[in-house]
Amino acid sequence: MNSISLSELTNQIQTVIRGNFETTVWIRAEISELRENNGHCYMEFIEKETDTDNVIAKSRATCWANVYRMLKPYFESNTGESLKAGLKVLVAVTVEFSGIYGFNLNVRDIDPTFTIGDLAARRMQIILQLKADGIADMNKQLDFPILPQRIAIISSPTAAGFDDFCDQLKNNSFHFAFYLKLFPAIMQGEQAESSIINALDKIYKHLEWFDVVVIIRGGGATTDLACFDSYNLALNSAQFPLPIIAGIGHQRDFSILDMIAHTSVKTPTAAAEFLIEVMQNAENELYSITDEIHSNASLFIKENLQQIEMMKLQIRQAARSGLLKEKYQLDQLANDIRRMYRQRKYNQENKLELLKNKIEVHSPKYLFERGFSITTLNGKRLNSKTQVKAGDRVRTYLTDGDFESEVQ
Image (cartoon, helix red, strand yellow):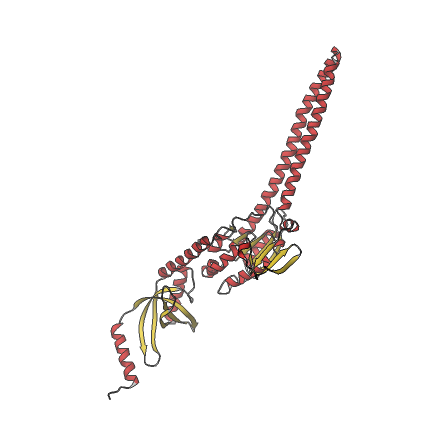
């Protein structure tokens, strides 16, 4: 029986590979694992079946430090993404085989336009899914409060953007009062998505305390924004029962969070300016109505004083001519005018009182006190009895607390 040694076999394999792969090869793959060590990058590439996601190919890959230190910033500056697991890439590799270390791909170059296309397709898929679910515009359709003074803030407590936002509101030139409550969250990286969703869940337990939610993040690399293109974050934000203002501090195209939020602005400072502007508009409207009432009342008095003077003259003429009947009619007319003035003044005062009441009834506290409640199943708000079945455990929130019940 003819036989060869293991080293002879691996040498033959190495010769075959070198003979067939003398130059670099461009391959399409997904990064399933990635780690950095001493400047080098060690990866695992995989390929999956389109329909089942079953892995049909897998290979180790290495990008040595002399290439990686140039390749990484080139990729990130062009795609706005950091190299990480889950990305699909188009890379140029040399094929290597070692008798000791086995098969390996040596990454020499990368095409960021391939990944940009894949990310854009994934982003569009999420947007289409939100629209198909019928929730893409839910948060935008909420009525924005007339006086948004009670603000729930989701941000990192150490972010410069958070400090800028708070300073802008506390030191506004109109001296409007704002109540600010921070719900800390991680605003970048792999844990950001779940951290922001957890903060929304905490706010949801105290909806009656707040008018709006503000999600803010200071400046930073574009590569840190991936969490704001998450379907789960968009799903939770779109269905949130309070208007959400997104000010995540970037200049590129809108993230998915920007698209589904009630209001989107570029920076935390711009979010503060928006809230101040809403308050100023409400104040101006109130002053405008008050001025209109005073103006109408003054004009009414002026017009009727002239009529009264004319009546006095007519009365004197009637007295001189002995027309007592006309004097009586003029007295009646003067009384009618006084009654008209009192009624007009009463109507205008009622108009002002109705406006004040309108502002008050927009308060969530007002609605809770009048019997409204929120019922949830597994943390999601119920809108129809068809969403529950017998045996489900639901939680109902009222103005003085909450309780759990079973559907029968």
